[in-house]
Image (cartoon, rainbow, N blue to C red):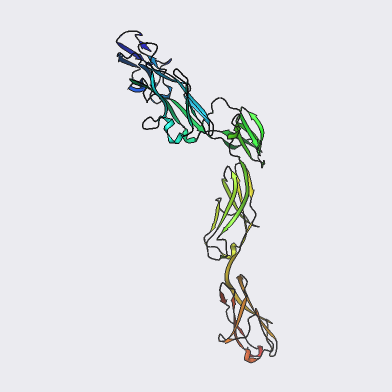
Length: 433
């Protein structure tokens, strides 16, 4: 409000509200679009100059985008810029028109739009980030329109308009139009038992009350003003959403995990004592948020991460493994993968048959046993730790046992990864025991 309204050389400007604001606000004053003063008083006194085109506006600090309309201090026809919309929210990839009307007391020499986050105002038509995407249309007293095509999320900013005359430039601190550019995303949340709710969400509230479209496996299943759609919890289909009139800008599809698989690293031979990592991979949107690991014919394993690690793998870890991938849409098990742990021969021992008394002239068979992976492929027999016996099979046979055969016998098992000797076994004739 301006008092007195006509030719006095001193004017009082009052920033008025329909109620008394709480919290002792600070008032900000703008003159011709330029920051002028701040005060806890809602009044500002100005010594009027000969410039009849001066206009003033006020705002409350912290809410500068809610400033008052500009008013003239001397006449009804002063310089001013009025934005058609203060906030606009549109889809990424679309086109937006940001407009204003402006009045200049003298003929204008230049007009352009700029981003308020630039250190100095820069004409958008000369900004490399907007090359080929910006166009101005409109005339004096407008609307004067800024059109931006192929919108990107980084285009989100406050846009301001300025103009110049031969002896005047509209200030750069007056709040303009805030543009928010958003993509579409389908959010999945549990609903009633056996149901899930899909919500087509954006990072800002879209302008112009859009109609939402939901797609199942790419086919339209619902047009509604509501951004929500219900499905069964066991539904294995994929879903996406769009806004009517912008069908080509639909969201990414959401779906339960598919193509779940397990890989083993290292991919070659696995040796006992080495480190082995199992990795669960799955195509899912939203991304998998829980993994469960299982050993076939066994219980679930500890941990819910994408990888399962054996820091020092042992022969007991050999077996079939699979994982379960789960997101908010559902879950899916992988096929099992074999983990075959190789190791040197161990628990090597010699047994004798017959196991009772050995009679001179009888047949005696020695058997070498060993736990090994891969299996033992070579056995070597020894007598009295010195004598090499001409035998390389798992069994060694003495067809007619005699007193000269009395003594200690042991075997060596070899499988390509290493070898292991058995303890010695004493064999003597029964009448010499």
